[in-house]
Amino acid sequence: MSAPRPDPDQTGRTVVVTGANSGTGREAAKWFASAGARVVLAVRNPEKGADALAEICAASPGAQAEVRLLDLADLGSVRRFADELSRDLDRLDTLVNNAGISIPPQRYETADGHELQWGTNFLGPFALTNLLLPLLLSAPAPRVATMGSFAGNQGRIEFDDLDWERRPYRALPAYAQSKLADLHLARHLARLAEGRGWPLVSTAAHPGLTRTNLQVTGPSMGRQQPVRWSGGVLPMATPEAGVGSLLVAAAGDGVESGAYYGPRYGLAGPPRRALLNRRMRDAGAAARLWAVAEDVTSTAVPAR
Image (cartoon, one colour):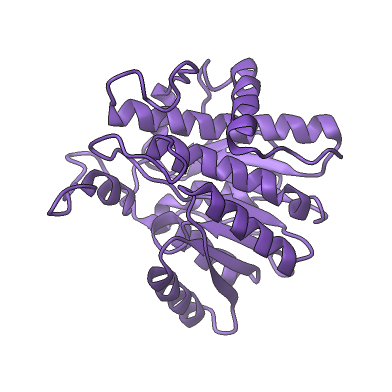
């Protein structure tokens, strides 16, 4: 059964969804298009993006949707995407930071030399958000929704070794660190917006345990045969159900800036406010991480 969807009409809003070619990103893009939004499918693979676009247009004839290339593991690609979007649009209403990668079996690096999960899941979305903030702040009621993970509950920000260069690489702790960082991104952006009087709402969500390419693509890297992941005895939601929390965060009515949403029962269930542990609530760590990421990505929030 699909999760409840938000009610607000999205007609007239322009929305960017990263990783929109599959999984929760594809479902989010499909929902936004059906709700009347103009949707930009930001994808790394143009063929898969075209397939997702065809499905969206078939489900919603007359949908306003397009595919644009974006590789979050390449900060040059992030900057080109943002520059082109800023050239073509006068405003952006919603940014959905959905794309990510999980638990590759060994340490890989991004185009910029960062550990792959850290670079793709956090540094790329961080840079994208900063670069698109001028467009977002040109909209009357902008929103940024960032995808976290239940694994973020175990995350720790190791400031002395964010890229796993000094320690032996461990895939799951590296993933958990990147997803805790995503939550810090969302919550610190909410604090910045409030402090500067911006109308922007910044939220976060996690999908619980949802069956997507995330469980296969990362673990299959470097292997001749793709990994088949069953999830064991744990219940796994479909993307149609797992996207519910992200849609509430991205489009729900009455959502508070800084809020975090997830399935009611942690790994499954309808969307609700998710609990924040002590590390998730650490505003000092979030501010420190923001400053580090600004330096690393050479991006910053607008002065105004």
